[in-house]
Image 1 (cartoon, rainbow, N blue to C red):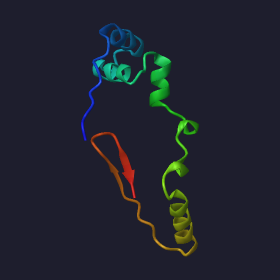
Image 2 (tube, rainbow, N blue to C red):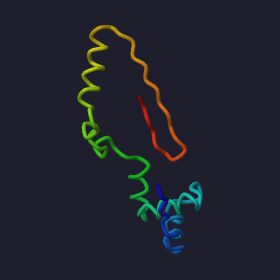
Image 3 (spheres, helix red, strand yellow):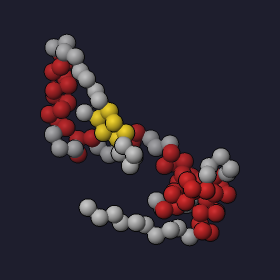
Image 4 (spheres, rainbow, N blue to C red):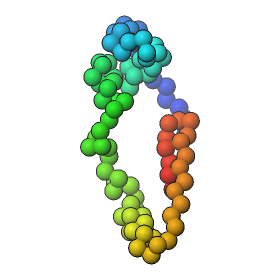
Amino acid sequence: MRWILKSPPKPEEVSALQKELGPKVSPLVSELLVQRGIRTLEEAKGFFRASLDELHDPFMMKDMDRAVQRVAEAIEKGQRILVYGDYDVDGTTAVA
């Protein structure tokens, strides 16, 4: 796998967003947001405070229907369920 690095954002865009976000948000965070295409306070609020209706349909994942059936079966039978979660350094959350 090869890493594809994004070009650094334009300093004036970072500065403009930083001004909107205020001193509680570091310039680095403003830079990262601009790299993600976020350029306004409203877009930043949407990014940090996303609503549930903006999430992807979990049934797009392969075999999600089977997983749901298995969890429902375990609940019906009074079986114990272990949920193991991991939050990777790359920001990816995985749960099994």
